[in-house]
Each structure stands twice: as structure tokens, then as C-alpha cells.
Image (tube, rainbow, N blue to C red; front, side, top):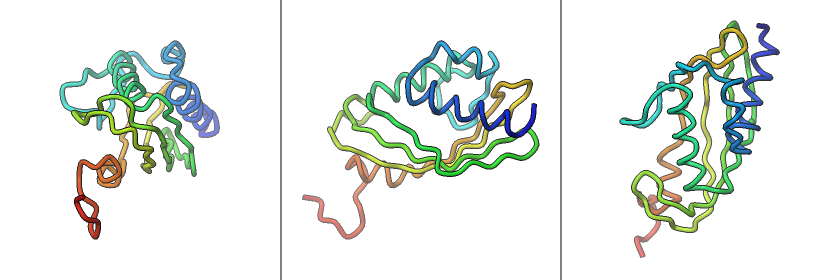
Length: 144
């Protein structure tokens, strides 16, 4: 596959699988034994694990939307700088719903083979997210 074709699949992952929550397209976008190198401990791997993980995130943030800010491809890898936004309306990693709107950024590296995602590494700004949810204090703000 060309880098342009891999970039197109990357975009589909974000638009259809993540933003729309259309998990039926997963079989077209990911290999069955897909490896997410940054999935939370205890979460199963593979397409099934990825689907469970994203479903849980979408339950916590039902209006979840990702924006691809920039995308670069070389060889079998695509790298995207992404921003995600959502309203915290369900339990998320042990944090009860706050109703807060959050925005966080990250970098996603996905390796492709045969037109499907094989593995990824996602590096997100967890500190900013936890501060927005009130789980970690923001320097300079009072705790009240």
C-alpha cells in the first residue's frame, strides 16, 4: 500500500470508527490481532479489545470527536497530531461523570500492512485531561 492509501485508512479510523462509533467497519480497518501498545492495563488486545476500549471511552464521552490536525506518512507508518473533545458524561478510568467539556491533544502512530492497521502507539496529554476533569489540581488554581 502507498503512504497515501495508508493515510486514507488512518482518516477512516478517526472518522468512522472513533468519531461515529461505527464498529462494524473495524474488520475493514484493523487486523484481527491488532496491537495497541498504549491500551490500559487489563484491556484485551486485538480488534475486539480495541472496540471494547473505544466503546468505553465513547460511553464516558458520548459526544467524543477527534480532529486530525496534521498527518505525516513514511513507509508503513502514519503519524497524526490529533485533538479530541468531549463532555464527560460517564465513568472514565474511575472518575465519576463531571459534566465538564474537555479538550486534549495527542500523537498517534499507526503501522499498516495490507491496507489495515496492525499496531499503534498513542501519546496523549493525560495531565491536561486529568486537570480538566478535576482529578489533578491545576497549578495556580485554588482547590475550591
